[in-house]
Length: 155
Ligand SMILES: [Zn+2]
Image 1 (cartoon, helix red, strand yellow):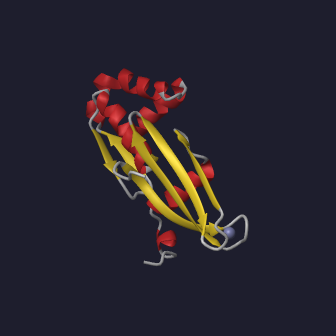
Image 2: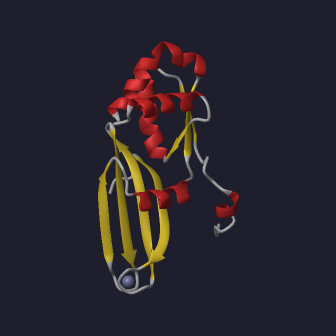
């Protein structure tokens, strides 16, 4: 496996579905071309049970949550002054991603305010699309790190 372009690689532990031992779960997303690819790999060292899942675009919510636990969220914002002349183009970026008009308007509003949040790979792809539409974007990784979660980490 070529990890050259991967972003948001995380390692998580969960109970093996087959034997109940602690299995190692690897959750990853990466930007490939103009899409987000994701993969989930579960491997049990106890019984050897292994499961692989992969796909494009939207990751199953359960696994995406695990990835966010691991990686935190990345915040994407666009400079408010820069947005006005290209508002329609930015709206079309969200419309092409399947957003309704109302959702697209709300997303563009959020970009200049609190920002939009997603996994590092999701926001990197969106940043690329918005930059292509002429926007000046800024990405802030590690936004979702919560102190109560960080406290549970070893290392
Ligand atoms: Zn097992």
